[in-house]
Length: 461
Image (cartoon, rainbow, N blue to C red; front, side):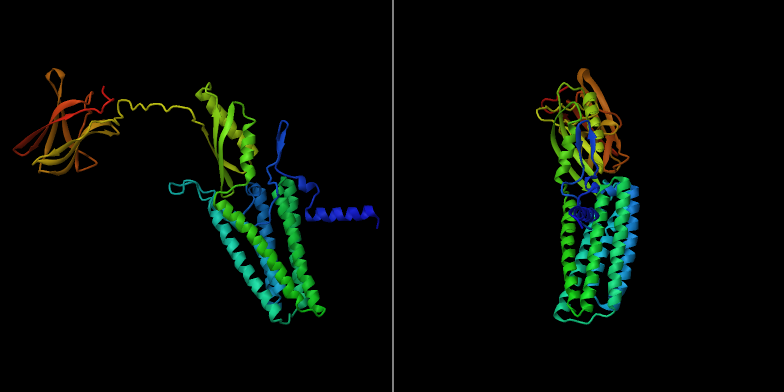
């Protein structure tokens, strides 16, 4: 075999394992003029469980691929588990746990797709996207517990060796594990190439690597057959160590997302998108977080003071469209304008908003006690008497003394919504600075309570 043949074989093996080759260049990139870029993470896709890549989750084709991958790996794990009970091999137990962990990656995705599609409610304003994070945490805990059990069994077998039976079945189960992972690898890589999904292709290569782990079980069985009984627990311990590494990566990814952590490149993608939108002076602030497998971004932009409201809204719309083109898993975007150096506009409450009403008049008589005030209602301003106590059959009228000897009479009627209040049917005329009398009547008793209302300083009409 010549040097060229060796180089070709080495290159082929690297591509089979996913290192280099055409697939390594596949991504979600697209160009805008001369600004080509990619949406993938710089470090590639880590081997995690409990977190599903959004580029897969947003595609029905990707969901279909994940679903059948789960079925294949579940069948593989069940067949291996049967042999574990027959043989007592801890190496096979560890590999079975590993395959179960791979299969359960699809569970949070299925849960998310069932619940996330439900519309938001008055109680859950943002929907149920967080269910995916909770499911991911649960899966990580299950895998961690299983890894501890597998590690305990492996160490126990090292200290207290026990004979392993059915070595042929153990080797066969290892081969089944390899074949199951290889079928999933070919399946995911094929669909990933059709979708141009770097994430799904990477998952395929992960499955292929897991298949090599299953072949380690075969090596352990061969070692036991050749008279080295500790080969099985040693292989089991090595696989367990690999599982602990996966648990660490998965837990870090799940916890990061549940704490609203994002990849550092997301903010850069948003800022890059703004470069393609004319009219944006600068990006003042960018925040983003995951809600399930959808990304939600809050962006603050600065535009020129010479822009009209319509132009500013057009800029915001263009930015929103550009962000959806740049960031595939983007669910929603909130865009607001930078208010630095801008003075607030004084509020104008019109004729019906009276946030500067005169101080109320305290009523304290033998016929009634309470508070008389001018209040805002859905129908406009009204004179209201809030009653703490009153005589039976109480009637009340407010007589306002207007210039020229005119008396503005406002009868107070029982409120339809509050039986502890009496309210006028009409609004008191402007200005709300006057001398008046509250006339209370109950049976043959009449009391006249004079009072004055004055508007606060600076709010005179």
